[in-house]
Length: 263
Image 1 (cartoon, rainbow, N blue to C red):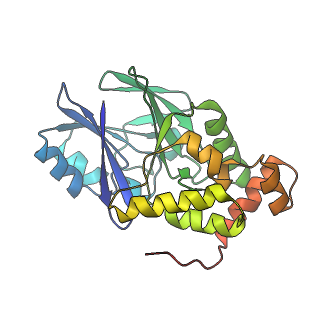
Image 2 (cartoon, one colour):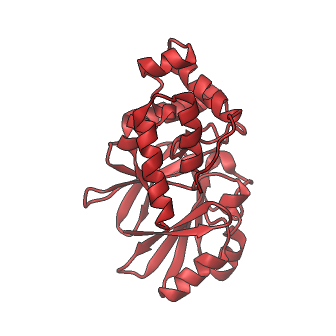
């Protein structure tokens, strides 16, 4: 299974999964259809599946047009999103299994950003691990709590952090990494790892590259959103348990200080 990434809208990513033997493709969170169709035509691929992580329009906006072009397409989403994802055909629950390109993915229920949010974890036969996470984890952040609670998001992040292997590549749906880490630097001004991360991200973006995907192990080591049990972070947030620390970080991000982007 090969993974390609399309940059669309202002900061969205669409992921194309490719079965090079069958010349078939699956798409994760098609915000819009046109660039997906162009990619399929250019590479002589037939779209057979859509994997939606949640119902927000910038993740399902291309479903209708893709369904019209490929009438037999299978469209996957959470059972919690029934009647909210256009043309959904498969209604998934936690720990369900799906298949594509001879590989198997496990579905995880990760509410918080929305009540029905899911993600797709592919542990490939070649040893690679790929997590298509939607808007639950970002580089240096997590999704806003539009529908879910602080407790739901914390439990979702706790499950992912403590369950998945460190070499998991996280394919998140937005390029928010620089902004997120600049804000986390305001929260933790003496954290050298965050400062180093910012410089690495700036270099990546200036070279015309994306910060996605990134390794789970790196996020666990640096991001304040996954370091809620760090004693120094608890001291900064004046908290003494992991849940309260996470809530403090999320609230800080919800009302961020002014930052100046370097470019």
